[in-house]
Image 1 (tube, helix red, strand yellow):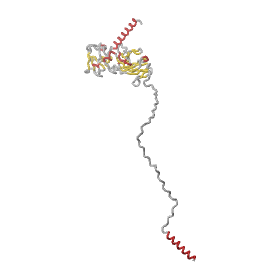
Image 2 (spheres, helix red, strand yellow):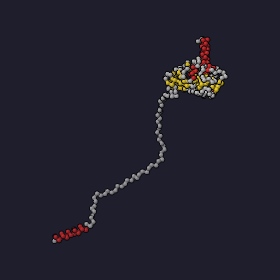
Image 3 (cartoon, one colour):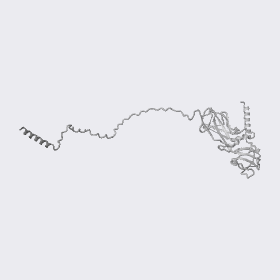
Length: 313
């Protein structure tokens, strides 16, 4: 590309960005401003230099004693100071008028990160993105109403990405991350980051509302700076660990013969002398004489002999 043509394109881009930034800061009558915005122009709301704006409380009635009053030095360079306006959201009026000059609102912002290839949202329970998948973002915020300001192309936000070793990115895969203009409460980028050429490791992502420097003037988590989303970019699933086959070497423990005789007293053996077998009991028993019958038998024998003698005679 010819250098002069390149210079012309850069100048046009700078003019476009400057115009967009200026229009983002122009507040119409009854428009909305956010705490932390600086350098905005509220002269279109009817506020003049040196005039006072008043706040009657949330849902307060105009005409009663105001709960807060702020004097405006330069309405073309106005700062919605957190010191003066924090906790005082709602309508602000000029003098006794019944129409609010503008509304003060707290900014809110959050970020969602999606693996557009696999079709899932990165959450604390799903933090692995396969290297090579396409990643997209969704910005949920209240500052999108900046797009309703006269000539505004949208509310600028910047997505921050910090990669391994603390490396920061302003562009990923040709998609610029700074001053992304959004005009809806849920802005989805689609698949804008092809991760195939990016190093493996942990990536932390968040988004900031950069319109009129509110992220610098009012750096509050969840208000101008979102919570972070962290994921692991690598080719292999971290839940799958490689298995290594364990090699078991069989070791043979040699038997050891103890050379020391245990000092154990052997038990005393029982006597080896056998019991003598008792004498054999006779199987024939001698007749036992009946008491008183021996004398009688002898007398009978004697009498029988005498009788026999007399008979022979």
